[in-house]
Image (tube, rainbow, N blue to C red; front, side, top):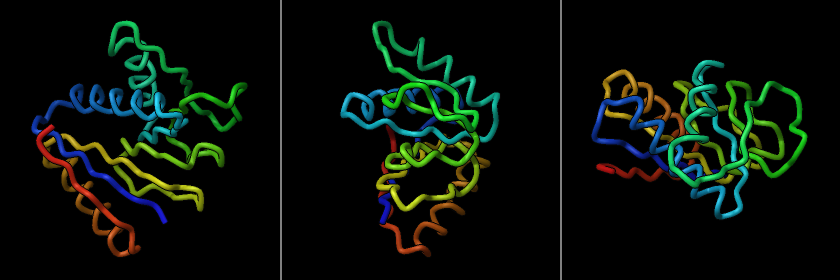
Length: 143
């Protein structure tokens, strides 16, 4: 069963939320996890795609936007608004506003929330759904 971690940032800045996500994605990549970054839209996927190239000088994280076709290489971070493909379900970063469809392979879900009321309200709904599903949830605040 999956483990869920909520990271609640002290700022309402969407940019800070995305930069924090990039740092965690880099950490996951360096530990050998080829995760899936779930977004709400193609536009949001493009923002994360661009930031992963530029958020930190000298950082290299192989990644691409997922459009439903399997990537040419397996050791890559995928970003998209579609459900995660089978080999990328182990670690899921949920930057979307909805509850992710989990595959049986999902071990960890990371939820990154800014401090805006809209984001927190959607996060609270997902938090309740995770708890009702019997999933262990941990919350980290004030990053």
